[in-house]
Image 1 (cartoon, each protein chain N blue to C red):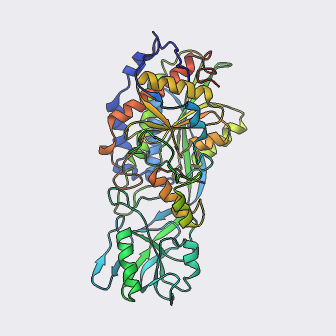
Image 2 (image 1 turned 90 degrees about the horizontal axis):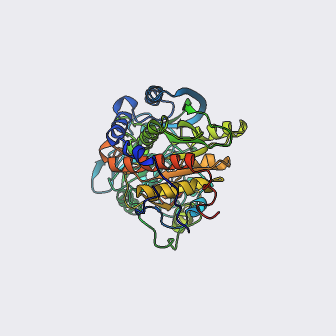
Length: 79
Length: 416
């Protein structure tokens, strides 16, 4: 028997999973209850945590509030 | 990319054996009152650990515990008593929804009453200072000489809860309460008008505790064969006084998936692959259990192939996968497993224990299908979808099976 051809597997290149933003830190898994298939990367997605607005408001990309909100919103986080 | 066409004879009976009811029962047990949300270092966490050790022993594994210390775990030791007046009416605030104790708060056991003011504007002594949007806590603290405390606005989740975090900033010198954004805005307007007061306490302390990972092994890898390590954290953020936080999706669901995958794989995994499980403690305190374990593996020069599951309670369109270390062969097997089981995967953040193994340069994939009620009283077993448990368990079983059976294809299936 060969592999079945059902839908599934990575929607893009699997190796993209090796280059997920925020990999350098760790602060709890984001809730991805509404995870949807991405069209393109959000324009304001930062490389570290949360949105650019979050980070700017906190004064630091890895500030506490930005970090917690980034985790809760599923945008990633930073260590 | 090319589609791998690895033979899968023998896999389908294993996938058919995945038992959703058993996993749902595991989630319900771990989320139950006796385990009290499973915060690291608590009696509930210890009881969960003992129960899990028994479950693994019942699966004929060699079980061991690995203890390690964790310092300064935040613990809200009483429900805060907070009331306020916005110039129109007096309100008693609802702990967990209207108000929560901020991680950066100093301990203030007894309620302190003070007039409202805006941080950075006017006199601060004896007043509760509302921190405007855009002002950091550090900056607010600079305007808070002899203040009663700080009040910051904090987003609530779809259920209206202020989610709990254990990993975060160290405590500062002042009491800090986080308020639901609408309430914060209302009190900010009152403070601007020079009216209003708040009376409240911040009963939070830091405790040094002992944590422990639960290890189980069924098979040792033969020379040149992969050693599979399935991981999930069993700790939660813990109950608050009067406020249960069952931690069903995060991460009783991941533990249930790992136990079920191990149950199926242990007697059936082909070839000379090894099989072990690590149920990790203190993830919510900063992924400390996996940090401890990864350091051990590095010191022992052992390189397992790690599959970590954090959040298998809800599946919308796809599961997120984050990989680290030399994981190309593992990703190839995962990709084929996703295709075979019909589970769509997307590269996305899984900020969990997998990152500690990745930092140790071990091949690792983290899988997060999703969860509802993150770190709140809404993370209950009834919101964990059995279909999601089944989908992720099938993915893990298939991935492990493919790793064990297809060594010749592992390095080429995704074109690396």
